[in-house]
Image (cartoon, rainbow, N blue to C red; front, side, top):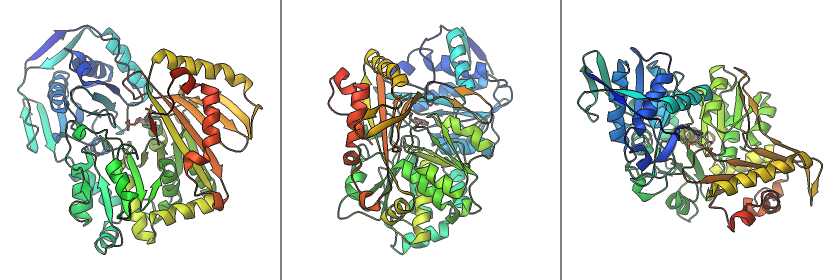
Length: 544
Ligand code: G16
């Protein structure tokens, strides 16, 4: 195989964010941009000689071209085996599973997750390590360091690989296996959940459902699993064909972006269950007939009911949530007498806890839930968990949620996002917040008295590594909390996130609209951070 060494210059903006490197497609299309980053990853790995790599993406614009380039760079860097999803497609959790199942040295997933796709939109690339999980910081720091000193990359001069036919293709000692993207993942789900029971309940009409794949990667997975294997009517999965631009939509499963589904679920024709997933299939949104389940509540409900699911019927070891996620799961952990860990935002922080067996379930407010079955959050897994729960209990989504609140209380929760904020303004807001932190504890703001105010820092209980500056937390004596963070996944300016939560133990007050229940806290957040005043905006870009 002929290998070409190409001289190159570093780019100064290849620092991975919360989940890999995300940029506009046009940035990735610059000569050598993708090549540099992939070579920087390979230069950071201890050994690529003879190694096996999993490769696939969410099908967004530039996916196929990027895959052909990566195949050639991988071959030139000594990888001997690539496992690629047919058509270049793999959901993030399916890629995680394939890495684990094949004991691959790692994987590259091409996705900008829930960000829009298309020639003028976003592309992304992330590396997952041999446990199937996102590369921890010590890796991503090294990728960035290499990207700043790179002077050449290696590329094999071979023909493009046929991505559309399953089976093996061999070029000298280099082997490419094209696999059906759904097969192995569907088998894994079948092992965890009670498929016969779910199927029976769906076929009897006790569960009616709509799953919105948002023209993204979960279309083929949901068609196979929900319609074919579990017997839901054809058409139960909507927007099921992955499109390079996601049909012009924003593949983010929340009430604002999955509007078609949200409108249906809050109408008089609502089925009993509704769900959606995102661009790369790791996020989920859960709805019932006229009810939306917040991701934080969903995690807590899963933890409280895990023993009803075959894959977890021997109990769960512990749980974890990202810091801005509501404290609902903490209450369940306390009742179950199991550990509950609070980690920074980013799925990579759950990896060590899962590997060490300290936790079984984990989740984030950003529509991510998962377990030890893979090392990524998993959208369809969460949907199947809920379907199994509905089938097993015979209850509606609304009944399950209200019973949970009655037992544990409700953590009323909302997140306000301000997108594309000018970077200098955003930094000014954070400087202003930081200045106030030392003087806040003990201060009264109407009915709220500040209990603590700090900048979150995390020490990993397994390897002792420390991650600082992970968001500003202000907690109040009554258990309410607000958190301010800058997103690590946005691609334009800064995205400022304000997370608000309030605990309500009185069942008579639990059914309130979150924005109304949190109104005082929302006003106080503005008083403390001045985002509206400083940016001149009157409302958040997105409220979830
Ligand atoms: C990624 C990470 C998540 C994180 C989310 C939002 O999700 O994997 O752990 O919660 O981004 O991060 P941020 O608040 O920094 O934008 P995804 O689905 O985009 O890969």
